[in-house]
Length: 170
Image 1 (spheres, rainbow, N blue to C red):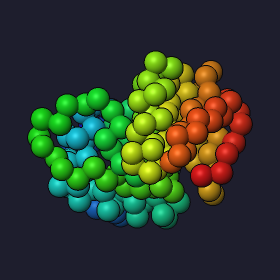
Image 2 (cartoon, one colour):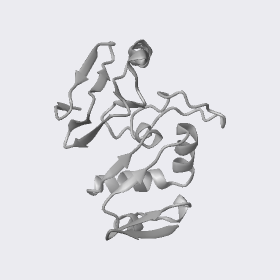
Image 3 (tube, rainbow, N blue to C red):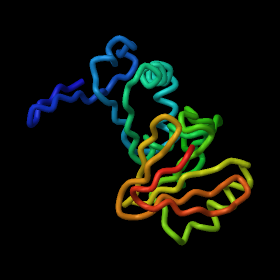
Image 4 (spheres, helix red, strand yellow):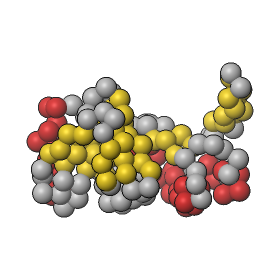
């Protein structure tokens, strides 16, 4: 663990998630979960039991920001990205903190058919985020942020574009 203080903002970089207890997390205003290989990240979160502490942190008013794989693990399923599953992690379930939506990151328009088919085959909605989009979820509503729309594919494959600064129920 490294403690940093830059411009009066204090943050820690965790290199051993198992060392944290729920009480430790309460001192943070927010927790950032970064990217990398989605399968490896999910395995680390589960094996360290950090996932349960993270969920409790969120349920007690904590703020979580996920970037790339860190966003994907917050959704219903984690098999939304092209990451190679070198560890043969079989469980595709994420934390399901987004009310049964899954997340895909690094979305491009060329992937439209792929995610339409994914939504239909999983019978589950998916939020697709480009490099220039994201969203904030609060009290059952999501607000699309960034310079490009958030793309949603419903379980039946219907595509919806949510424009920046537009909110939608989730």
